[in-house]
Length: 353
Ligand SMILES: Cc1cc2nc3c(=O)[nH]c(=O)nc-3n(C[C@H](O)[C@H](O)[C@H](O)COP(=O)(O)O)c2cc1C
Image (tube, rainbow, N blue to C red; front, side, top):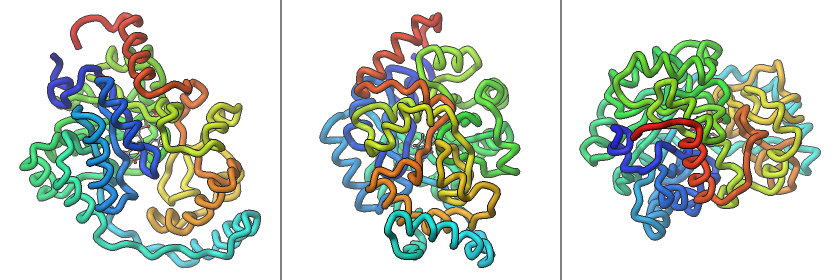
C-alpha cells in the first residue's frame, strides 16, 4: 500500500476535487468514496449547520472516508470604493437584462471560517483540505488532535514548501489548467500560473509529503502521466462535473458539452479572485477592468449569478471549468472512478501504488 493510500484510506489514487457552491452533493461524494477514491465536499460557502448536515448525509450512505474543504481565511484587503463604482454600471446593465434591481449585496459574515472549522471538527471527516493560504498553527493542531488528515493547496514550489513546513500531510499541486479559483497565496498570482506538467515534478522534488496533481487531468492517461511525474495521486474537478450526481444546472452541463468549453479564461470577474471559467459575456463585460477583491466581488455578483443560473442564461452564469473541459464524459460517479482506474492501469502505470 502506498503512503497516500494508507494516509487517506482509499483504494485508488484519485481525489474528486472539492467544488464549493452546491456541486459536491452528498450523492457525488458518497458514490466516489464508495468506489474507492476520495470524495470531497466543497464547504466554503456553507453554514456550520449545513456542513454538519452534509457530513451526516454522506455517512448515512457510506462508511468510506471522505474530505471536507474550506477556503483558508484571508486578511481582509481594504477595497477602494472607486473600483466598485467603476464596475457598478456594467453589472447593473447585466442585472437589467435579467430583470433584477440594482445591486443588493448581502453583508460580509465575520468569523465564518472559525465556525465552519468548528463544524468540521465536530463532524471529524477522515480528511480536511483547504486552499487560498496557510492555516493558523492552532487550527492545524485542532485538526491533528481530531486525527483528521490535512491537505493544503500549492500553485508554486515555494507555496508547497511553506505548506510542508506548516505541517500539512499532503499537498494538492494545482496547475494553471485547473478549473475555478487559483489557490495562489504567496507571490503574484501570475507567478502561480505554472502548468501541471511543470509544477508536479518540481513540487514532488521539494517536499517529502505525498503530492496530488491537479489541473487538466480528465482520464486515466492523465493520472498515469501525473504519477510518472512524481505525484502520488491526482485530484480531478472538471472531470466530475459530467456526473449526473454533480449539483450543476442544465445550462452549465450544456455549456460543458458545447464548443464554448474550448475557451476558458482566468478571470476575477465573478469573485474578485482569479479563477478559470468558460469565457462568456459576463467575463468579457469585465475584461480589463479592476474588480474589488475576494470576497467582496463574490458578494456583489451573487444575485446576478443566481438569477442567470435560474433563467438558464449560460452567457451570464459562472461556469468554472478547467482547460480539459472538452474531455468531460457524462457518466455516473462510480462508473467514472472505475473507468479512470481501468484507463490508468491500461496506460502502463504499473506496480503497486
Ligand atoms: C467547479 C469547480 C469548483 C471548485 N471549487 C473548489 C473549492 O471549493 N475548493 C478547492 O480547494 N478547490 C476547488 N476547485 C479546484 C479543484 O480543487 C482542483 O484544483 C481543480 O478542479 C483541478 O483542475 P481540473 O478542474 O482541471 O480537474 C474547484 C474546481 C472546479 C472545477
